Length: 105
Image (cartoon, rainbow, N blue to C red; front, side, top):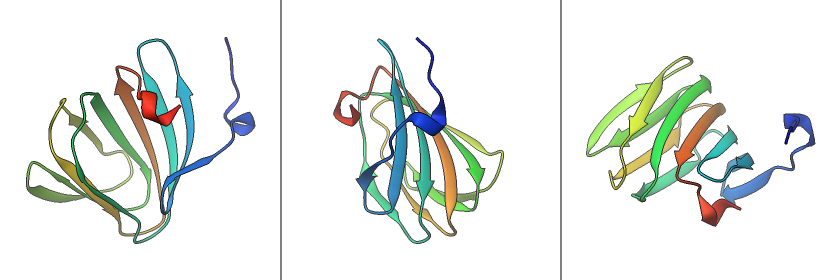
């Protein structure tokens, strides 16, 4: 299977988080466009996650430790770790999840 990002419809998964989502049998990848001040409330999930900040400044809290990340920064989030975030500017983020985020299909 091959895809082109420009042909994938965007879904607003939560307020201010518009994602183009790709799923395989064992993983999901999300290309996010995030509006300034949009928040991801604290949560945890069974999926391992890798977050890459492609553009903008993103405040991210992992297990109670808050840092600001910018272009090129990568955060690895183990399964069941509590995390939350806030876009300090408009952002572009890339998230990879394993296993597949079924609730994002």
